[in-house]
Length: 507
Ligand code: SF4
Ligand code: SF4
Image (tube, rainbow, N blue to C red):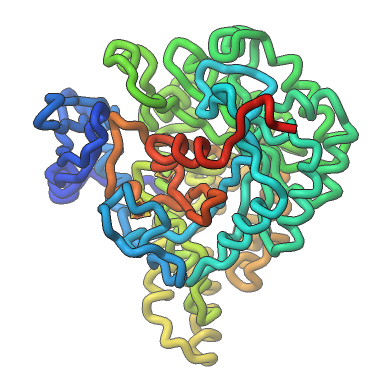
């Protein structure tokens, strides 16, 4: 029995494709309108600038997946922060966050420096002779800004760069984030310094670091040589060894995917991770996005979309993991709705655009990878949770009835015959919905792997409808909070120019 349903629905397809959205001219950055169209089963974005002509870009390589994912488009709760700026110049020049933004910050990024101990051709940050390095007071103010957000304070912070570990005060910064109430504290790192010093790993663990996002392009020398100019694979292995020794047991591998660089290794990366589930909890594939202006030939040569990645995973895992096992980020919004209904107050909801990312969980048993969609009817479950959350009247008695009803219904969504090994799936779901605790998932997490993808936007495929739903934001020293894809395409330079100093003045 398969729980996967046929999604292709002509009406939805028309709606998603016929839509006109706003985008940017990649040359003059003026707002222009763009349309989606399909050709040979792929989805393209086409836009026209009066001055610079027509631009066509591959957007999604699988029309039916585009259609299936777009079913989950939803509006977030918006911002209620007193600091949300008025819309004056129009999106994306009002970042931010402005009053029109739909998703509050789910993950706040803070660049701690633009210095880096590597100089990779595909990196966003570029020192350019100046140092951008906010001081402790500025970092505290940026974090406070994230925590002040309404209706929900930002729950998670990621320190990035440049390379955040080049700062000797990183453990103090992590400790400060902990003290300020962030539930999830992460760093995004190339792992060089962490591979060189187990003491640094220990110190970060002691300071309260939850998760290491480790740049990880593949499982041989070649992808590193192609993307980073040297073989870093032994260094990644050493870093992982140090994480294990120091108790940093939540690692997410982050491969930046580009055609011809590492697209042949996605299956191997998953298999590699599935052998170290004691410390590796997930993989977040990031298809390449292009910084600034990039020639069409280069984009065509290297561009990889989320559907391309899912097709590669399917191929390279011999169909153990398929594209149908993945769902877009807002698929899990009903869980937040339920939680908010029961608590009587807003909770973070993953209302980002469906084309931004895809995710699933795979369970690992005796060398096999089993996506959870094979034994849990995740769609049916989410539908039921959504209906119950919508019908909840807010009373205490209603809350008890709601929990009782959900617990009674849960077994319907589990296919007992297909549960791998002795995993107690129904008991696990009971634990989650009855107590809402993470403990209920401990057994599952110890043998499973999160597989996610996020395709950051660039000037060629930018969709401003998508941007205003972004939940991953940068906090900047001027008190703004700027959506990730807006920051990296438009605002980064201005912020860094304003707050950086020439290299010789940096102490
Ligand atoms: S991206 Fe969001 S914050 Fe920025 S201008 Fe658009 S709606 Fe406002
Ligand atoms: S960072 Fe970019 S790709 Fe990710 S949610 Fe925001 S807009 Fe979407």
